[in-house]
Amino acid sequence: MNKAIERQLEYVLEHSEFYRRKFGNAQLEELLGNFDSIPFTVKKEVLDDQEANAPYGSNLCVNVNDIRRIHKTSGTTQKPVIIALTENDIRHVIEVGGACFKGCGLTYNNTVMHCLNFNMWAGGLTDNLSLEATGATVVPFGVGNTKGLIEMIQFLKADAIHCTPSYMSKIEQVLMEEFSMLPRDLGLKKGLFGAESGLQNPAFRKNLEDKWGIGAFNANYGMSEVLSMIASECTLKRGLHYRAAGKLHMELIEPESGRSIPVQKGARGEIVFTNLLKEAQPLVRYRSGDLVEIKDTECDCGYDGFIFEVIGRSDDLLVIRGLNVFVSAIERAMSRWIEHLTGMYEILVSKNEPIEDIIIRAEKNSASKLSDDQLIHRMITDFKTVLNISVEIVLIPDGTMERVEGKTKRLKRVL
Ligand SMILES: [Zn+2]
Image (cartoon, rainbow, N blue to C red; front, side):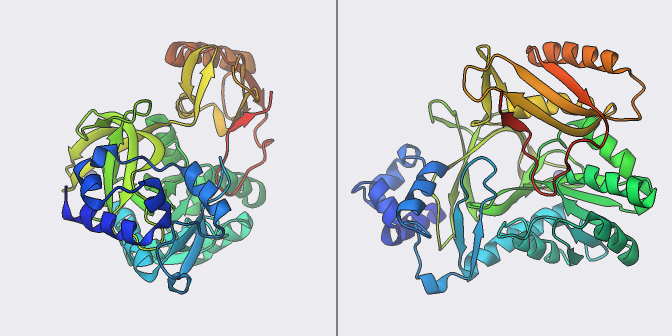
């Protein structure tokens, strides 16, 4: 077992009440000798522990006075986790974050509008500092005031933007309505995207790139309770390059059995992280819930390491009439229709399992040449072919769905 893991486990046993309790009376030697049998940590445990030991939880390994910054997770699926960082923790986060944005080709030549929520979310302040670490000129715009954003992009001649992919459709709407401008006219050259899926679909990416005249990159895979940013694409767009070596230990497991899977080309499993340097709230064998596929172990850009793609969430698995379907798979299937849709849609299913019906309400792109009936028919057939599920499609007019400025939550358990 490598030295970094040994050092970190020793630190955790010495300072974390949470892990001492979780590991029973296990000594360092036992843990090191059986790393694969160390119990996983899951988000719910961390949340429950924070509730019982508010505000930071019993995994806080440093003196409260040594905390320099507090974030919270975005909490789109659960309550937020409070994240405490020491000065060293912040430095490590920014080092990897900077490497991720640099990997996407962001340099001191760029002026980038940073449009994520600063309201305690690591995507706000921490990503802003990671963008600065590339040498680029960074505009900490945040979310809201899309009209002001467009004016500022024009005024500063900004050439790059960092935001969620769905925010681009909000900008597009305001550009058309208030400026009578097309996306291309704004002059952006580079789009750095994170926090939502979509870009791994070539049709979705191409549409975004053609419409805006930009290079679109999946720039920001991360998990704020582990490390704000962990991986990003390179300019060749061949999948997420893991850029956290030395800061994290990464494993793959079978989600059902928890058994380790060798990390090699073609392997698929849930990604599990252990912090190697974190001081404030280090996590050991933390289940990310993200199912990934290892695409390669090197790239022509000169990168030598794991390249992966997120293929689903182990907790977004829907059982529809007995068939396992990931919400992310539905999202990928939807992105095949980007030519005819605006990209704004919601997936409606019943509140409780078993799920019998699935309704997709989607905005039709006013430029689509297909009639509503034609489009609905083709989409239903495609869902049947690609995912083997029957869906009901409801089309609504372009611009009628509310545009949000943060992370879009498409799945709604409401029926
Ligand atoms: Zn590469």
